[in-house]
Length: 178
Length: 178
Image (tube, rainbow over all chains, first blue to last red; front, top):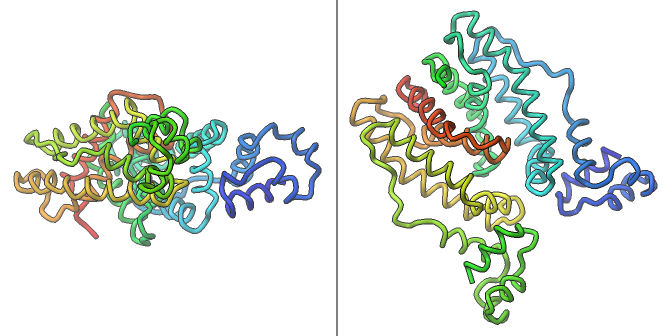
């Protein structure tokens, strides 16, 4: 069922999604599908849940810059090689549930990534009191901006370039004030 | 016509847009409307064109940080007080023409904002060779990320906080490498 929903979303977009279409595609009886998911929004929430890796831990390369580069390579791959993320972002503008699911997904990732900032501060790379969430957003938002909103051509240097800028900023204390 | 299209987009979203609906709303005969705009995408392009201010020039406050804070207050207002921008971003996931129009709009703004980096370099605030576009994206992308993708609650400190981080990063040379 979730595989069928995911395939439908990726191939034909949010517009094409309906419980009936997904039921037909998966060969499951539509009554069963309706019982489990009230609507497409609920289905998308489970698709995102299925697609996210619960065992995910932030990279630990030994340096802030290395960690941020590794995170950004993952984000870059999610935005260029895998159509699910962008399809879900597009759906989030049309389904409150999809928006909430994406927000929860990102909130969880920012929480897990707090270790990156904590370790960097312990190593003395960045000031204590660096705001981990702001650092992570500074390190990743330009990738989303370029690839999702500006629809820039894929540029394999981008993940590293953006990560290095964020690491430089963090070392200079850019994320300690409030 | 464009006012009617804009009102329809803001009140009922991209889904509700059709040449017929906009014609009816504006009281213009639909044949006339079809002659001018082939489809909703074309209409959106003109809506964005109308909504953007051709006389816009980047702020010139005398410091990099002041300029970036001023830019970010404009971005913040566009994303919180004015529903047009977010409606157009949402539409860009469903209309190639809307996506292209937004991209052209942002490209134009980045071009104009190159003066901010040039003046800062002339004042000796940031290294010569700072990439103006990367600096501008670092200064604005977290705002889009928080308000459009993460749908964070409006936070009036955000524009200044993000601008200050980007200015600190630029002074530390975060946007000079390639």
